Structure formats: structure tokens, C-alpha cells
Amino acid sequence: MKTRLPIAVCFVFGLFTLFQYFTADPTLESIYKEILDWMQIIFVFTLLVGVVSLAKIHSEKLIKKRTDWPYSILTILGIVVMAFLGFAYGTDWGTPFLWIFMNIQVPMQSTMFALLAFYVASAAYRGFRFRNREASVLLITALIVMMGRIPLGHMISDIIPGTAEWIIDHPSVAAKRGILIGIGLGSITTALRVILGIERSYLGGKGA
Amino acid sequence: MISNIMASAQADGEAVSAFLHPERIPILIGTLIALIIFFAYTYLARRGGLKIRKVSGLDAVDEAIGRATEMGKPVLFTPGWGGDIQRPTTIAALNILNLVAQKTASYNCDLIFPTHDPVIMSAAEETVQNAYINAGHPDLYKPDNIYYTTSSQFGYAAAVDGAISRIKPATVMLLGTFEAEALILAETGNSVGAMQIAGSDSTIQLAFFLVACDYTLIGEELFAASGYLSQDQEVISSIKAQDIMKIIIAVILVAGTIAATLGFEQVAEWVV
Image (cartoon, rainbow over all chains, first blue to last red):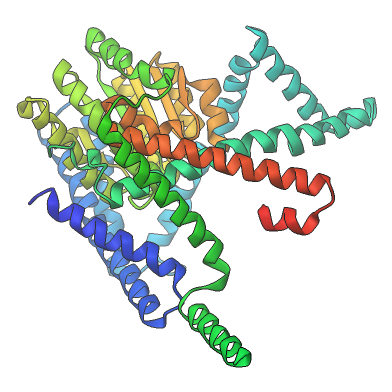
């Protein structure tokens, strides 16, 4: 029953969603919109499950003084303070909730994003080394594309930006489309396997 | 009489277009063809003996878990920030998670699963718990190892980054839908010396994974993983059906290209 019910629910809703995509029937479209609304409602409840799980894990870590427990104080403090401020003063402009969000969370997020530049540099260093034939092709291609995108490339020769554009527009797009076709077909067959109950691994295996 | 037949046909056409989106009919035809191929191969699967080509990234899963077990360190598996439970990539990631969890249960190796989505967390809890039961080691299942971090993209990246830096897992599996956090996670995994297996449906992030990870599942390999790892004939049959669909698409593309080259623009437009 524990497996059959989710598979049955998946089959009915999966088939309905697939069918309604093709139909122009207003009744079916309104049912579909209703389902989407319900999904939003369910998501809000599951968010609560996530926050409870997070609070539980960090409370236990704090109480049992496990490794790195001081970080848990910050996490719990963050959850409690932000929830209190949100409920007490709202989330509009000028409220303490939004002030903390704009002055603590946003800069921290920007810092994480900024790290990406350094990671790109270190990954590029490893990826573009002359290790073998493929890596050499990658290095030369990357050099042409990068040179074609900066004024120095234009100054050296107009062939460089033209070649860079050609690489981006043709071989690169062809490779991307090849991968995307694979991804699209993979998505379709995975969806069909799930709808038809052939794929049950996500429920813990065939015998689950 | 002819006018009556014409009027009847027109009325039928209008009834169909009132019930079906006319612009989606070609997609419907494509879907029906896909379904026929899919069912034909599922029927063929009963005979058994279907095989798929070797995928080095998936062959490395055993090696990666074995390495973690030998080192006495955990395996960290995360499905990325970009997906939700409706996305086939997430389902594919959960399918792989199930098989990975069965192996970590057998080897008595810890499996850590941080995620940004509470629904994925609940599904992963169920998946891993059942995998541990199926592997015959329900006692080894640790519910605290599957946890929600935050829905914020870089908050999630920071949380997973922190976990990788502190725990120093022997193996990191980045399988699912990744966006800008992909390289941040992959480079952190690389910096702690973890063996990394990655796969995503984003062509942009795949480029980052290729340079930062040991093995990368490209395109449909991520979706084929559960069939490849479990050797389930029904799942493999659907992968075979996928290959047939790919051949059909390739033929259509070549036909369209030839038509366009020969100047049959209308035919090319209709085909492509």
C-alpha cells in the first residue's frame, strides 16, 4: 500500500497533466489550475517540514555539543529572530526584517557569488592545461574565443573575432543542441517510467 | 452532397480544434510515436538480454563508494539548487540516490544529503530509508544525514560548501539541476581531495563540471543511470527506446538540412 498509493497518484496526475497539455477544454484547464494551486499550498506546508527538520538537527547538535556546535547557535538564532521580526513588524520596506535581509543576507549572498570568479580561474587553470590532445584543443579554442571578445583581439586581426563568433555560433551550438536533445529525450523517458510505475527507485527500489 | 461532406469535415475539424490546441497537434503526434516506441521496447524487455554501452561515470560509482569506505569518510550527495521534485532531473537524481544508498548501507559508509527543497528532502528520506531496509541494514540509517539547508541559492551553496569543508567527504556526488552554485561546490570538493561524480541538465554547468570533477554524466547519461546501475531490463528498455527516438530525430534533422540546402524552404520548415 505504501508503494502502490504513490504510484497510483503519480499515474493519475501524470496522465492527466500530459493529456491536459494538448486539450483546449476549459474544464480540464481549470482543474489543472486548481491542481497547481494545491501544489503551492502543499509546498508551503513542506517548507514548514524543512524548517522543523533544520531546527531539530541544530538543536540536537547544540544540546549534545557535537562538532562545530557554535554554528548551530547562529542558525537557530537566525530562524527565531527572522520569524519573530517578520510576524511582529511585517516584511515591508523600513521594517527590521527587511533591514537585516538587505544588510546581512544579501551581502553574504553576493560574497558567495563573487567567489565564483576565483573558482572559474582555478577551474580554467586546470581545464586548459596542455595535458593531452583534447585539453590542447580546449585551450586553443578558449584562447581564440577569449581573444575574440576583447579589444586586443580586434586590434591584432579581424579574423580572431570572426573565428570566435563562428566557434560560438556553430560547433558550440551544435554540441549544446546534441546534449539538449539527449536531455530532452532522457526527461521524456524518465517521466514516462515514473508515470507508468516502471521506475520506482525514487520510492526506495522495486520491492519497496 | 460534396458540400455536405465538406461541411461535415469542417465541423469535425472545428470540433477537434475546440478540444485540442491546434498548434500542439504535432507535439501530440510526436508524443504518440514516442509512446509506441516506448511500449514496444518495454514488451521486448520481457525477453531480456538488452544491454547499454559503458558509461565510465556510472562505473565509477562503486569505486567512489569503496574509496569512501576505505578512507572511513562519508559520501556527500546533493541534487543542486535549480530543481524541484517535478523535474525529471531530480527524479533521476533520486533514482541514483537509491542505488548509492543501497551500496553505502552494504559497505557501512555514511551518506550525507543536503538539499534546498523540503519536498526533495522528504522524498530523499523515504528513498534512503527504504534503500537501507532493502540492503538489510535499517539500523545504519541516520535520518539527520538528510537535511534541508535553505531555499536561498547562495545560502544553499554556503551550507553545502561548509559541510564539504568541515566533513571532508571522500566522495562528492553532484547529480541534479545545478545553476551558478555548480562550480562553487565542485571546486570546494576538489580542494578537499574528494572524488567527484557530477551530472546536470544544464549545458552551461556541464562545462564547469567537466573541468572540476573526475567524472561527468553528460546529457541523457544522468537519466540512464538508474537502469545502468540496477540492470533492470524494463528501465534499460526505455533507454533503448530513447535511442530509437534519437535516431528518428537525427533522420528528421538531416532531412530538414538537405531540404533547406536544396532550397525547399517550406519542406525544411515543416520538417524542423
